[in-house]
Length: 389
Ligand code: ADP
Image 1: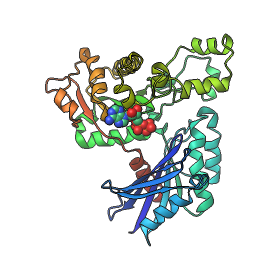
Image 2 (image 1 turned 90 degrees about the vertical axis):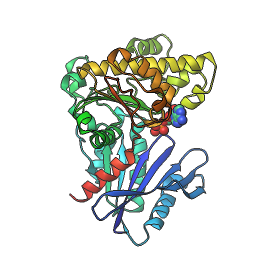
Image 3 (image 1 turned 180 degrees about the vertical axis):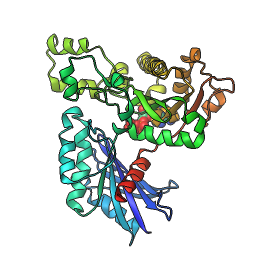
Image 4 (image 1 turned 45 degrees about the vertical axis):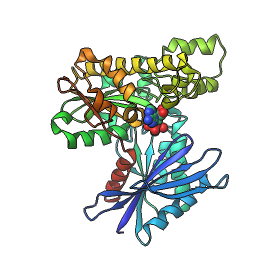
């Protein structure tokens, strides 16, 4: 193999990774995908591109965090070929990181300084970078930012209505899930250049969830803002909330800032409203009224925000569903679309049930698509591009 790239996507308790072989035309092709589980029972699993299990090993308590097992696995698979780069999904790029960058010590320090903007997510992104730098100091590492795709939103869309001095300090709307949106924008160009040039809302509905309004494949609005808390109801995050509620919790209930952070990021959303689970599958299978109410709220807010983004776009030509819920839950897609019928959205029930790529009915004014996302592939492509600079 001439060379390979590894893409890492660090989450709260696991790191997803993809290993890509660079073909003769210079494009990355998937060799394997895996998960390094850093939870209570650390484990390293990997599957080939065709889904066959290649590797499944329990790790010693502190072994996962060292990434040595992951590197051994990768290097075993590329044999004599070289590892060209390790690319990382990084949640926050602030105002300065608007394209993928080589992760030099100075750049890593600058990224670390953005931690106050994403206190939970940024340290997770940095941990594998540091671990790989210690293990393979000579390996090219590349950072790919979830905020970068939204650099095209206007000042008005980015602004929050606080006194101006806060904007100068970086208090503005950034938007997230940018690697997923970049992938979808690219797929849409392949599926239909006409649609890609039009007005699209992409619904990335996973544990974290957001919407992106795109015109001509570029972000013009999005539901996440200064932080990844804003916008839709998520697995455990609250989404948009009256700031008066936060003042009430701080001033009247005496909740500490740390506990408030935990409440908003980890105890709210589907989990908080249902009191049962953050997992859409569990809630969808439950007949508990609280689970039903949580799903109703999820759908209500997703539809409401889609309509708001259609307003930013002056109309809607295309609606794309992606990520865990968007790709797999026909009832949620159907319920969101039903609330958007006034916008001309009509879905084909059988196509939706079959998770077809095109799920809108022939008479729908809006084309509705289901497109599986692939953030790791975007990281691999961007890392290769940086390696050639
Ligand atoms: P993230 O990458 O943000 O952790 P995912 O994109 O993997 O999240 O999405 C996870 C969500 O997708 C969970 O709520 C899960 O229940 C939901 N999900 C996955 N498969 C299905 C399914 N078949 N039906 C309904 N929901 C599903």
